[in-house]
Length: 301
Image (cartoon, rainbow, N blue to C red; front, side):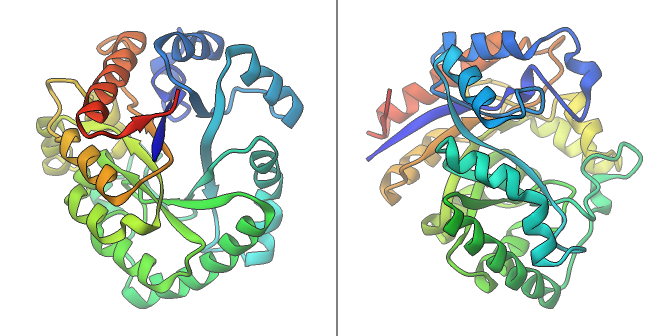
């Protein structure tokens, strides 16, 4: 049983707030990730679009493709139309042996809108989530048959955000719908990450490690700020940051106990003027190495 350590380039290349990271290139981010010791990266929008070009790009830095975001529109599209919309990404990820596509419903999310408080995110009824889950199950089975898993990302500002939403989605969907377990988004949503891990551990295909600064999280909620306001203010950070509040040792202990085998990906978008991404990404990497060793969770090199 082993895990692999990866990183999202969002600390260097923030697509939602590009002004934050304008001083950094994707090439710098790739070099830094490889130098720090990460084995893989999630796909960034500024990487080569074609499959062979992306393969050569990853090989140049000795990194694997360990996943990548997919903005879903299944609430408003038919399953057939959504298949057509994401087919190229699914086929590319399968060709590059990526473990999953990080899929999230974005047709009605407020996560990228600076003018809408994250508190105003869409909240569906249980029946609405169940209906969505049936469509999602069809899409996920098609992806699995194509050779790549659909790993659903509960995300702040979206219709699947808190523990109740996750329960409804997992209960009503088939086994091909797997879960991305994101520590920071869970805590921000008011959930207990360990409880979600205990309940849905067998469905977890992919893991994001991000910490939360509790004071910023509280201010975002109390002042009705947007999700991106929170990011800019520093609501997220890496594991090992003393300003964070998540007990990652307890989480790696539980991952080891449940037999998790897959990627642990650091994803912590911050303002690089306040949190230099090279330094913070190393803090996150080194902290995970230490706690995995204590948990007897082997890291595949």
